Length: 264
Image (tube, rainbow, N blue to C red; front, side, top):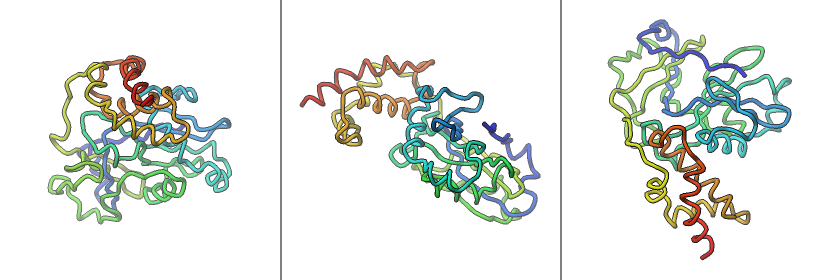
């Protein structure tokens, strides 16, 4: 799969904003996630490695599941000649010190599309591609902004589309493939560590179990509810969990509550 493009701080890449028109996209704090369509289905990777199919680390499972459930494979195969040679790149949205509205924030946000014959597509083309294939593109704060109108030191950071507060930063892109990052000061913090038992005590309520079960419909079982519940808990509290994240410990701590609730 194509690697993620380098994204320097805007102070280190002033040429990105010197001329032309810019796209400003909300920088969402999460984990890099890329994927392509393989012979046996979707194959995922982070910024450094490719995951074995269906063996994604627990911190990526929520996003990988969402992509698998919504990505329109048939439409993609019909639209291009070599679908396996394209790479889709974006963000697996999880807690990395910035608290988002997790019900509002998609599990995966698409940022880039890399085509085998044309390289990274422009931000407008990438946005349209994600939308047509069933995935949410990252929020575009401003499109086609004249470069002369953007001065990072004077630009007022807009409100986030996914949290109550300003964006964590802006991904600034031009139509020539240049990109740079402007980070909002003092957004996010290192959270205190929480162990699996405490996490379950704080977050696993009967109402939450019911909501997860409702998404499964007729396929509701204790094991399936636990799978989805653990994915969501890890997503929402990832940076607060001890490393490496012990999904089995979280599952074990939640098992009795889930089984009891589903039996009522």
